[in-house]
Image 1 (cartoon, rainbow, N blue to C red):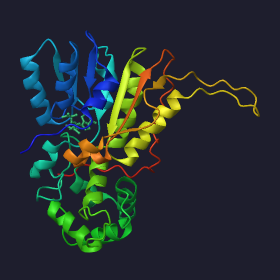
Image 2 (cartoon, rainbow, N blue to C red):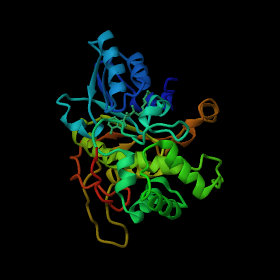
Image 3 (cartoon, rainbow, N blue to C red):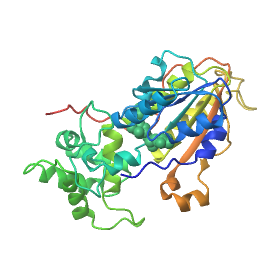
Length: 325
Ligand SMILES: C[S@@+](CC[C@H](N)C(=O)[O-])C[C@H]1O[C@@H](n2cnc3c(N)ncnc32)[C@H](O)[C@@H]1O
């Protein structure tokens, strides 16, 4: 099993700019790449969060080595507000780690056969439950919205027909039906099942809902001057972060033509005018960084806005799926 190569490490450090005595939350500990870099950059403390048991075990091992500087907590990052300790900055590196992808038995990979699971934590329905229980129309919406898959309808129809005969329980079975339906049509030369697997992973782990909740929790808990740094790999997730930061950093005032209108004072000020992307050099060394986008902001003194962010992604809600077996 290979390790996880963190993306945009220097850009993340620059945006966080950790200082002596600060407490920084690494909300997606993973392989601990960001945490190690933060701990090396300043004599600060880090609290690592992860919902994945293997990541938590790696974090616990680090905590045993440096108990005064690092604490590991097994939790979802949406629960940030419940940490019970003040913190000065939060970094989120949204998505899966190479550790998770590389373990066939976790069911994230269409390249290796494994159970159709895809859960980062241990709770909730698996990808097999979702494939078994969503209607054909809902599967199509899932692949369309979360996977941006152009052949969503045809794939959903094939799955809905085939599952009447045998359930989809293995990653190879799902990858097989997608390849059969769309062949090797993706002009961007990715594996035909890439988008369907990505869509399922995002849905199974409620990745959009988790992100929305974490952003509002950070807004609620960060002190004035506190920093929030988010790295995403998917356009829907970036959209959520972009809309949140834009909304929270805008001064609402009237124009020449409309009466003056004072909206709430901005609760964040943006660190960068534009989204930050990996350098060509990093992309050449680590192709995964090609789709990474970093956005970061500093908390102002203004009160947090009422938390109404759910729905930022614009994806219509799907039926709630129950865990079977
Ligand atoms: C891309 S990896 C992070 C890699 C990390 N930055 C590093 O340098 O090694 C994402 C990690 O976040 C975790 N994760 C994803 N969603 C989560 C959530 N909602 N709550 C807590 N952890 C989550 C995953 O289990 C995974 O370990």
